[in-house]
Image 1 (spheres, rainbow, N blue to C red):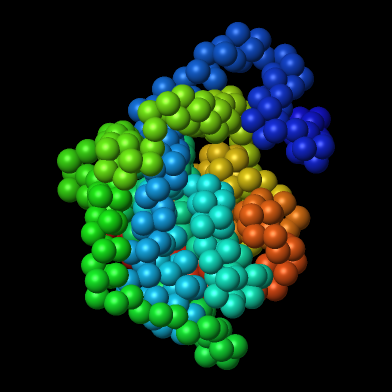
Image 2: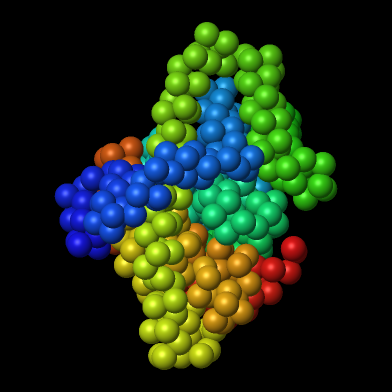
Length: 419
């Protein structure tokens, strides 16, 4: 009966956090296990007793402070210095700016919303098809869950009980590969469809753009440098980055007003609380998985099909793609990690860092694929282009992601080389 309750609640669009908690409660009531019932609240709370989870609201706050402080616009101008003069220059600027923002925001949906507002009107103004402009922006959002920092990596690291800093390092090479694949797509589209020519900045313009960007560049430097050099944990780096973002926006760019902090704190708290509650509910739902021995049963089924780790990851990619089409990426990570990770590690000796990168990148594809496609609809509402018009221009980028996923599944070193 519990699987029926779980499936029905998902189909009627009950929030995933409530689905997990209610399914666990139904299972406890159905089995009459009073021991589990007595410790229900304690189990939920214990799921949050992890220092790494503090990074989630702090990275969210950093993104809010950057948007309010005018740093996003200056990062985009800096990207124009390096790639603005090529054919399809604004598309490359869009991609490079997305890489900068991915190293700060860490959330694909937030990044798509921010960059759609900033880049799509500019690209349309310079003669780009609005569907292609929105598709390029939406595809760039896929870099956020891979290039560190990443909220999905934080959550996966907590669930998998592995160092979050190492998980961030595992995403560096895949993130660069994905950006290179997207740049290749833009180059081919520019060659076959004749995208507008860009304009190089003059030397004074380039120097001005780079100088104005330097303070904003301190933020990704503080986040990634602190983690790579072992100076700070991801949580501490996020705290430092939010402080730097506030000081730069207030004292340097003078666009961030201290009176706006209250509203930003509230938005951050509301958005972070949804994720945190989902993790607490998932900790309780883990009981159902353990008592029903779901990983063991699923492992027996999959191992009867193949003993090859690569084939196993291809099967998992297919499953995750379907799941990502129906369930939000963060919710899916919380739901699937306890089930599939033990199988990957115990039955196929797959490195947890490789598995985490493959899983997070695959699930975030669901942001851009119907029927749910939250990122697709965000890009649509921000740009004014219909979702199907965006999707027509988006498919080459989705194909590029598929190629990268196959490479990451086949070659573990792409994820583990820097750890």
